[in-house]
Amino acid sequence: MEITAYYKNVHITPKKLRFMLEDIKKMKPSQALQHLYYSPKKGAEIFYKAIKSAVDSARYTLKTNEDMLQFKLLTVEQGNKLKRFRPGGRGTAKSYAKKFAHIKIILTAQKITPVEIKK
Image 1 (tube, helix red, strand yellow):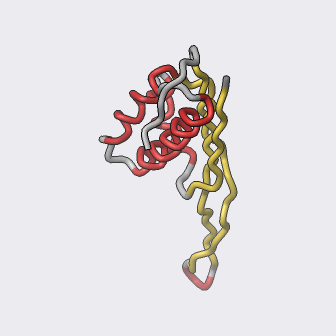
Image 2: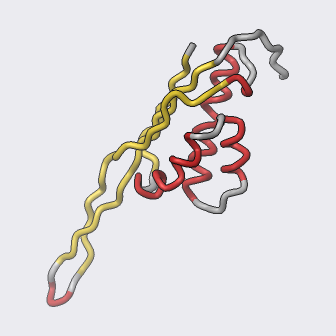
């Protein structure tokens, strides 16, 4: 069983997110959440929210424990760009782009065991 979570238009450049991607892919989602919680980077907070949401939806739909989950796919893709201009020297306009990212998470469960959900 798989759960797919796709987070679009996150206001951070994909390059900043990809720096943390290799470390997180090697971990289980529950370990990755603990690692990201104490990281001081802005991308860590974004990854934490995305993975936490995917893990919670997997717990409720698959009725499995979060220790049984693994990352099947974890990617960061290029999103839209907002193109803007700044004033430059001698009346010229200097262009720059505000970049966005998309995060795609696919979680799989090793074996499904029913678990009671606390409310």
